[in-house]
Image 1 (cartoon, rainbow, N blue to C red):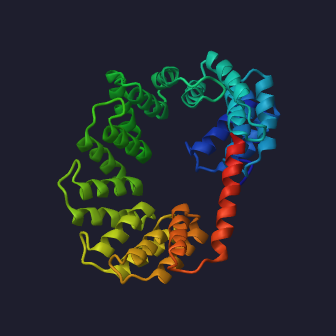
Image 2 (image 1 turned 90 degrees about the horizontal axis):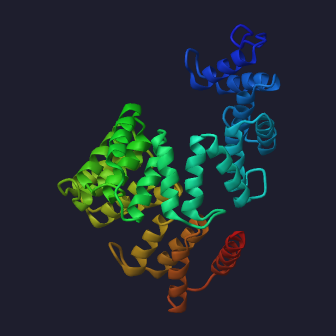
Image 3 (image 1 turned 120 degrees about the vertical axis):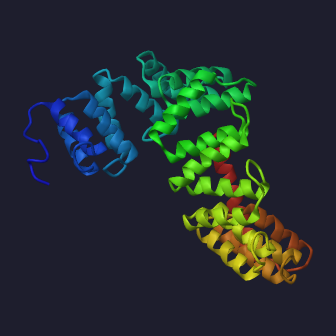
Amino acid sequence: MSDEVLPIACEDAACVYQSALAYRSGQGVEQNLEASVRLLRIAAERGHVEAQYELGRSYLLAIGVQKDFDEALKWVHLALASGSADAKNLLGGCYLLGNGVKRDYLTAVCLFREAAKQGVVNAYYNLGVCYFNGYGVELNRKEAAKWYLKATERGDVKAFFRYSYCCFENGEMAVEALVERIRAEIVAHGKAADYVEMGDLYNQGRGVKKDVVEAVRWWRLASAQGSHEAMFKVGYCYHEGKGVEQSDVEAVRWWREAMARGNTGAMDWLGRCYVHGIGVPQDVEEGFRIWELASDYGNPFALTHIATAYRLGRAVAQDYEKAAYYFRRAIQKDGDFNAYLQLRKLVSEGKCAAAQIETDFFHSYCAEQHRLRAQH
């Protein structure tokens, strides 16, 4: 990249910073995250506070550069020393998650409060998270809703979804005018993830009147943008006959689309459809093939389905040895504790011999549970 493109010679740090933002967003130039980071560093080294903050954020979130907590904290602290409220919020996030520092909820909340006093919208959201989960403060869902609402009123869509959930938990309805405003904003920006979330909101009645037909409408919008998660949900609605006319044939069609994009939930259900002849002619071999594929994609239950079919003699001849084989594969590949329990039952009933893998898995599982309890 030439010096003409990167305005390194520009003495004005603000000019360099604006160029960095342009390369990050791709506005007016071809998007180039690496170039953006180089320009941020130039501006940051010249004392530009926003550039210091954004450079720290880049290292923290691996935007155009490899993740580096030490480098991130260096620039965040420099921005903080110059009074950056955003840096306070970002540092609070580091303490909340234990990124580059020892996890400290009290310090995180303190920093979020300071940033919130200076009007940082994301700090409102983060305080909502703390009150919702009891991080550094007493768990208080009504207080969480208050902070999520403040963030929502400033246009934070993700805060709206949290706010609506708090309303649901508190037995309240979300502010109707706010719901309409957020709906319009989501449509204007057209992000598939937000369409999916809005569908979930109406499907569950989170702060709004439950409306599965409306949920399906939002999921269709997300599906049109290629969301495999939304495709899976539409397929499930067809399977259950919720929000649409029941049709297993349509369910299979939607699940095939989702499966083609790597959705393991769709693979799981398609496997069931083929094994049991739901919406398609029965084809046990094809069902097992799809479950094997789902396992390769990380679905922790797919191999257990095959094992259970052999254990119970469903759709295939009962075969305890094959059941044990697939249960052991599920344990090795996916760490499926349910597979372990079912395998132990087979062993205790004398239907298959014990193997070292069960003992190793149980010890490993217990050690992991002990580690998780120690963290909390």
